[in-house]
Length: 338
Picture: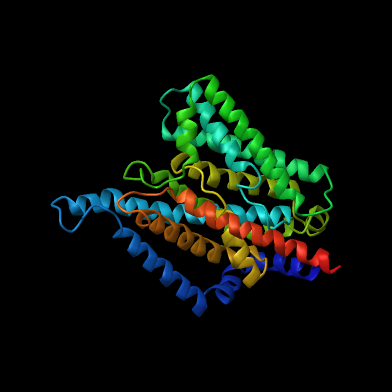
């Protein structure tokens, strides 16, 4: 493991060569083509007949194009947030939904609504990002101070913490008659996405680039504090950086779209099972598969009971819970064999 870690440090000076060897394969190109096809299908999926109406092209660029772009950016954001969290905690069952991060973001949104009756999107994003960072740091600090015998306990603690924060949000919402804001946030949907309401999602591109730049250092941090420090990496600083990037991604998605459960659990685990745990080489795969997963779920949500639309969070929650149970069973098998 130490040899692999040292190789990661040496690769700091050769990121382009490393990525070229790992990334542009036939399977990755095929995955990109499939995701592009899903994006085209998304552009032409909907009740409104854009080809038979006079304002069809206007509606196409006002709603369909922004929705598809939001799908791609959101899928990449939540998937890479789950990947970084799993790497830092060394636990495959961790992601924003199972650590309480998304619930903290919801609490931040609620606090913003209490102080600003009609908050702008920037204010909502600020509240969600700030509380996401606080909640994620609390979770990480708890893991550092308490030694857990089983990796299965980690997501259980995160889910319990999220339930407590969600209960506080519900109580505060009922107390100040702001439950409508909470209910809207819990229903993660892209139905309201249009020009002027999604542009801040492009910040996710910057977050992705920063994660890619610091990928090797985050990988070393995932090996533990002692190993990372011995290899010259400031462990606490890189953990703060990773937490900040996760919080920005989750906060932006929470403010613009809402709660999208288990997306950060499904995609990184599939990629890790096939390709291993190297963050730099896995990040493009995670982003692409995250885009494809959320786009496919959104297409299903728009067509399953057409002309009505099911929230995409319902489709994601159903698929994600099944994957979560399968991962739990896989974690238990080695213990039974021993």
